[in-house]
Length: 147
Ligand code: 5GP
Image 1 (cartoon, rainbow, N blue to C red):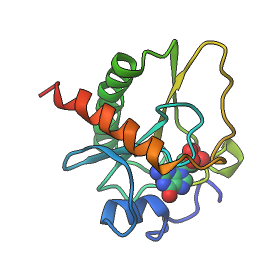
Image 2: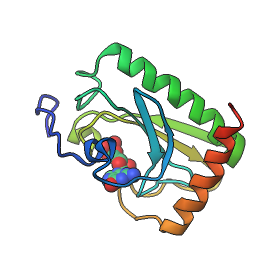
Image 3: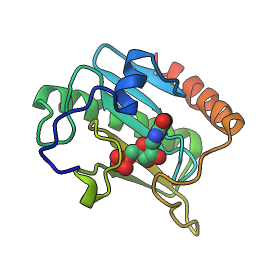
Image 4: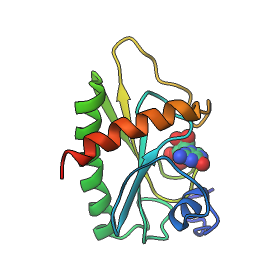
């Protein structure tokens, strides 16, 4: 996938937005959706995506949609830090396969980091559904306290 490959409406995140594929949802509004990564690189790895932009990457997403995504990234990063107490957080975004992108609907990764724990392999080991459900409940509860 090059930086100019056209958007494929069958990509997995587009399916999640349409409700055609499941996700462990954390947050949704009219413009933005956030859910747990199915192949987490750390405990709490979260993805944030625009819902209305048929954009593969940062080059083709409209600025307003990107701003709305980043506002949710900040909000959820605060939630994750409050609830999971990591020692650091990586916020990452990849563009094009050579840069590590594997799903071609623009998204931002929130990856909590814990001292002494290495980063899991990107898009590799699938998490246990029970663990994801438990984590989803914890984070949703914390989000609910924000009002
Ligand atoms: P990228 O490699 O494009 O920056 O990130 C794509 C991310 O999506 C990876 O971290 C990968 O683990 C995650 N991912 C791939 N397929 C699915 C899926 O079906 N559901 C969820 N929730 N995450 C996925």
